[in-house]
Amino acid sequence: MDDDSSLKEKDGLKKATLLELATEVVIDQVGSTTTLLVERLKEAGISPAPHEATLFVLGIRADTGGLVYEGTTIRDAAALLWCLENGASQVAISQFGVAKVSETQRTILHSALGKTETKLVGGLRISSVLVTLEDQYVAGLAQICEEIMELTDSDVFLLGATHRSGTGKPQKKGGRKKKRGAENETSAVIVPPTQWISLIGRASARALGVDLNAMMRQFGGGGHPKAAAAALRCNTSPDLNDAATTTSQLVPPMIAELVVLANEGNLAADETLRLAISIIETQIPEQLVASSFMVPISQIVTVDTNDTIAEARLIFDNHNLKSAPVVDSTAGTNRFRSSLKLNDLVKASRAGRSNEKLKGMLRPSVKTVLPDTNLADLEHLLVNEGIGRIPVVDDDGILVGIVTRTDVLRQHKLYDESNLIDLKLAKD
Image (cartoon, rainbow, N blue to C red; front, top):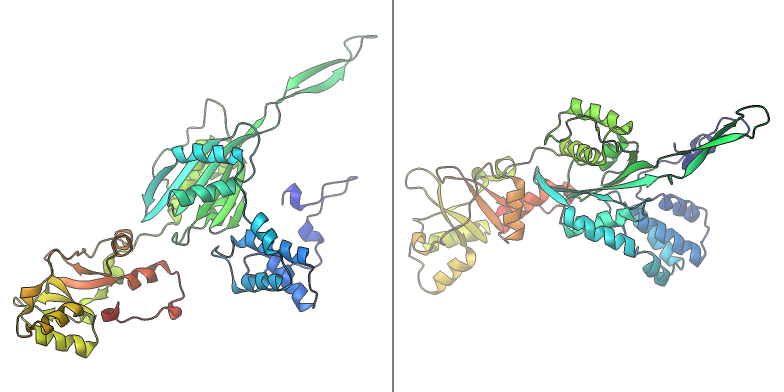
């Protein structure tokens, strides 16, 4: 533990950590330590005063990001609600619950935005920036990190901030006598300030597999899987270590060696930041492709180009469909031709076209994808371009499956699978 979590040596006694002095240790899966305190008060029947309840609410909000962090639990929400029921001031919460950006922070934010670098790794937008603080550490860098992450629409953001520790002022160096009767002579040496880099990371719920806590722990820091930080010394000499941190992909053995160098203060700030990004990249799983989670052709109800509008309407009614792919099976294959909606059939039937073939009412240029299309591209089509479902075809144009928004949602694991409505393909 560091000095903030331990008792310093005094009178020759060995310092004891707070953990060693504790009479009870509580480890539980909640998003906020304050939640554990509130639950103890509630169990004991002790009602906090309004100002105390307000402080508890602020603590829970800070630890859970206003109940939006991934580690937030129902217990955190219940504890916050109990504090509100006990008179927590909403006025005070609104005033102090949102950190205000200072002029210094705003300057750093503007500078960082112009230097932020972003790359796509496994379908995730990984962004990073290195900023130099004029002197000492500036509080509130976590807020800057979160702001830039939102502005750049990044899935993972890593902020590196270099700053100095120490003043560089002269210090006296032991006195000694030059000869009998002479006054003690003292000399002064300049103690150079030490350069540090503070690493602050944030990750969204989309960044599956990314564990910022595990990464930061390698540098002596820690936090949560999606929010963590660390601080370590930097090498500022011109003759920097020849470690190959400039490579785009570092293998695990090389990463392990560089982590040792970083913790010894033998890497430059930019090298340390690149190393941290490389560790994050190793956590990102290989991206899924359409063929790994699409609805296969064997489970898809289709209509044929040679079916009449009346026959297609009957198929739609029997299977309760709202849309279906249209295929051409004349050559014994399910060559994809178009997509058909129920509304189109209803309009055609009312217009007296029930005996016409479907080939006469096909929609032109329907978007399709190949089986090896990755999840990021599929999500862009389904979400950003508003397409509800995408036919998957092989190189010969044969329909092999369909990907829907529900399929993509499942891959992000935003919800427990048991809580997802198992929509039929026809209703997606």
